[in-house]
Image (cartoon, rainbow, N blue to C red; front, side, top):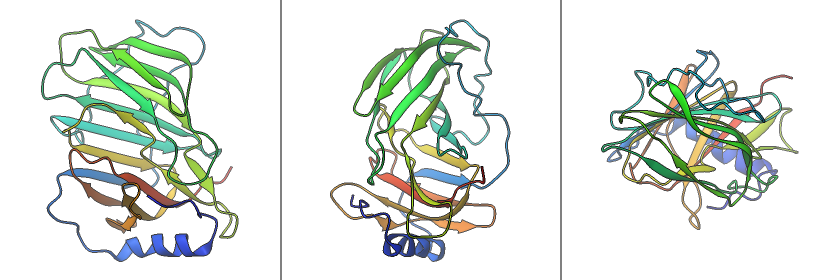
Length: 238
């Protein structure tokens, strides 16, 4: 997927075309991006000290597919992404692998931090340090089955444009991957004005995808898709 020349006006212009693209059909998974609003779902783990055993709400919101994955991100004014994922597997899940991918455009190296894994209302695993780009983590999820919740912070997934409007940026929503193929996904982005979306898998170029409205947008992805999803946004004011 080629989005490396992100500072020129051509890419932003191409991404803005997404707003008028019609529905994508014959696709299974769901990506929803919602602008503004807060429901507290992306409260993150504390860094440094252990959170194992701490109580936490692990009930998946109504928007989460069953089975499937709900990924809910909020973008901070400094460009960090605070993310919560709810994973509801088709069969019992005792552990899984997570990896940190590079962003699809030229930017700082991606990093994941403050990672905690919760099940049955308590934190059951955590990574108190940072996971750099290319790193993998094997996470255990003891419990009686059901939904697993992950909370973490992603840095390096947002690249500001140097030649567009102030606070204009691209954000890669796909830098953290969980090795659980075949699950539908619902992904939400909050805390920014979303201008357009593009989807693609390297080395193919990104294509416009989805529709946008004043309240948000929707992109459909195959359940087993490895496609990157890129949003053109206006960052919130500091």
